[in-house]
Length: 392
Ligand SMILES: *Cc1c(COP(=O)(O)O)cnc(C)c1O
Image (cartoon, rainbow, N blue to C red; front, side, top):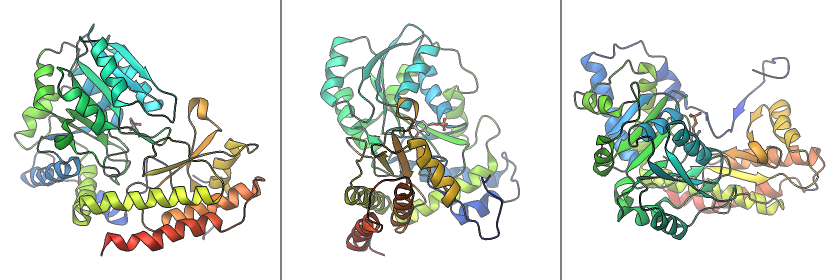
């Protein structure tokens, strides 16, 4: 969809934090002939995907695949673990943290909320205090990277707190997985939910969820109603190398390629690559006098405050209309106050300098005083200095 007449030369650039751009080798795989989902060859594809998902999750546990957006897996991690009347702690500091609270409420679970201002993080100490004051809590719902603000929460710190209690830690890693470290087993995160259309480089439609032994024990007593998202059915079929219902077969073909590529690049290199991109984005912002919005920034996203006196709605619109570039604005009360440029997943060394050159042109035209090229140069310098540390 474009806002201007289609010209032969027109290019579109997707720099939104989901859905994200998809590499050509994934697009090609998506166009594969349909394989029947109960065929032996499809079971082999599933086994490959599941094995690679364990690598991305850094876990030995099974990682189940659900045909849904990420919210389906979030819902499953409430409806499968808890019962109406149970208490859960929800860490909220943005749109997705709030979604945890909404799902709990929908299932009659009492959400005890740790609220932080959007853009800020909750400390492990805050969580420890809240857990201590509420000993009946069965689960803690958290977010790795809160995509609405660009913040990265301290999941490792929360896991240390939750590990020695009877509660389980559930983490929404939808945008974070594959872009910032999440060591599921080493940190002891009981349930990790995510999806394919952020850093895992496929179109929307697949969600993933891992479940620890501690969480399975809790699931035994859960009485929330569930059918399509009953994880026991996923587990039972997983053991037979299949899925309970028809999976999105061509998305499986796509994710098979993206996960293979992830593995070939290697976990550490992918993480480091995102760190460099995040650093380049923040260096550009500093050089342009722009303020980074999140207190503890997630490296897959550059979330910046709209400068004083500039119309935030006009910023994202200008990106799209004048440059064919889709980025994201702020949500809810941050609408018009921040803008977000994604560099998670299929993002290479020139993506940040390129997006920053558009940022400069957009802001300059909207009346912000800046010297063209200053932000770009700062990003280029980070890339020049650090990209070589990634190795071949
Ligand atoms: C994108 C996203 C989601 C889920 O959104 P869906 O529209 O259900 O895919 C959930 N949590 C976070 C942190 C996200 O970035």
